[in-house]
View 1 (cartoon, one colour):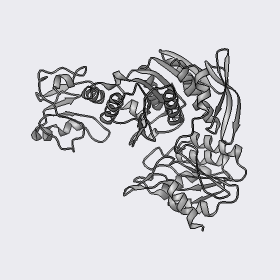
View 2 (tube, rainbow, N blue to C red):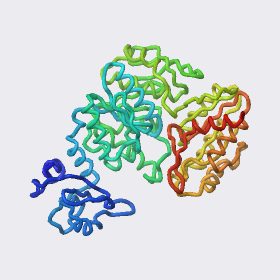
View 3 (cartoon, rainbow, N blue to C red):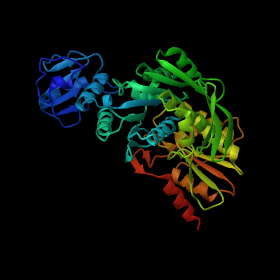
View 4 (cartoon, rainbow, N blue to C red):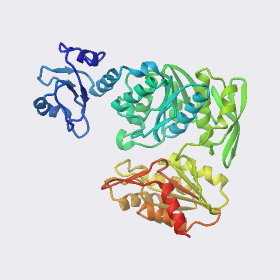
Length: 477
């Protein structure tokens, strides 16, 4: 590709006829003639400092945020934004061939995007999905490293979707992805907001910054669907300028749920739109999944697929891997895996389980290392509201001492009567939970969900809780 074509919409250069063979933003990678290097400024490293070394290696062109005194450079205001636009050009701007739907919020993104994708598929569309659990191109399932991928992977995925004949792409739009300009240049047919609760403060610093990052999605969409049961949702609805609709499970909105009946393995409610109401049955348990499915049905209605068509279909849509996933045990107790890793998500899953439980609710959970430490004691208090026994253990400790993380979690139980045990090693904690399970217990393993790994100080290891549960059950025989 010629440099001029690569930089279209990004910057102008008199060197536009240079042949470009690769794009880089990591100075540690091998590169040389034909390479374009985009200088990003991070918290710990400013890539502009690597320019002299990269010039010696023969890099052909640099995109910078300041004049570095070299001839082969283009100075732009924001190199992260430039990087996204450059990758879009590299892959032929595949987003222009797809209708894009973005879902943002702390909790519920994976379920909402999955349900929307399944409904669109049922209407005969070939749909791509970008999310936390996996990426999908129609029926093809691909590994996902990040919920909102880096620009090179993101536009590569969109290119593959377009080439495979997809006409829609449904994706999770994370606050980090939005803040890091990974979605710059995308125009969304519809953007949806689920909720905002404490998470990612290690990255954003404050809840206000976290909210502002989410709000960026609604500056690049044709229409918006907002959950007004959430205070941040109410604020968002008042601030955004695009066409907008609201949804609620608690009161009046453009789309709302009425006469909700929660059941152990799903719910029944009436989906209300204007003067119309449609009986809706879902297989996904918990009140939060009433909100999630309501969002999905409302999104389809905004896109032209009426509830008379969607509500009959949604009853056949099953759960999402790692979201209130029941693991077969063959025993007289139940094991559930759930990705809940925020205080609000933990309360949602445990309160839903508590409503249906015949015995104790036992919650095994931890908190990730090198992440927001403020929420650790809050997680403990949230779990203690509904669980009869807490097993406090590791999640992804990363570079931190697992026991120190657990100590910070348990500090949140001060002044409560919560019963708990501490087991640093998560595998040992699961074995202990299985061994000590009583008849009719419901054991909730929270925090990992779909993940099949654990990140320790020494690196990533394979860790699939389905396998660990089976091994623990086998050990009882």
